[in-house]
Image (tube, rainbow, N blue to C red; front, side):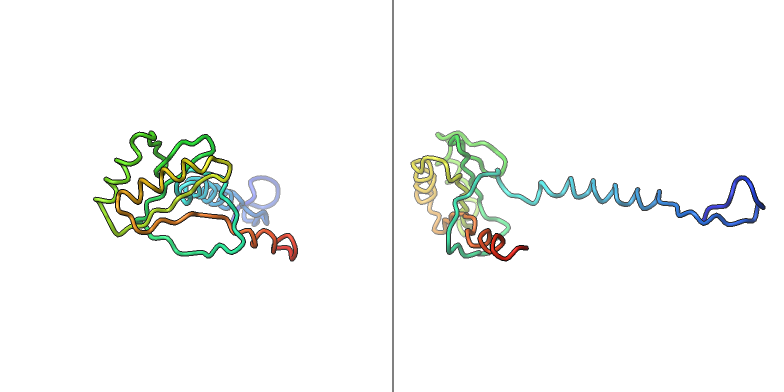
Amino acid sequence: MAFGAGGGSPDEVKGDINVTPLVDVCLVLLIIFMVVTPMLQQGVDVLLPEGPHAEKKPGKEGDLILSIKPDGTIFVGQDWIPDRDVPKYIAAEHQKDPNRAVMLKADKRINYGKVRMVMKAANDAGFTQVAFLTQNQQAGEQIAKHGV
């Protein structure tokens, strides 16, 4: 509680609310969310192709996520991998853990010859689980029809 500094008796209680602690807590929460939110997305941001019947399958923590941007550059996580090093890198990742899956995030505007090259490298390395990440087309249509 705050006590009056001037006017009235010294024992008079002031009825104003001190919002400083509330503002401090809100700013700390804002900073935490600003730091954590970019970490939630895995890989590089790309525009995924839409599929009418895309089924959501849970990914595992150790899955190898490969992203292909519209200009054809290939990323593993946030790291750029030159085209000539992709087969060697994927083979090395397979040797680390042969049971993991490859998740391929390819931008829908690219030439799919690049996707074929990455899939061939994963197949040659010995990966048996390769999945394409897509965006569910029906979710957007349902929101447009029914609202949120």
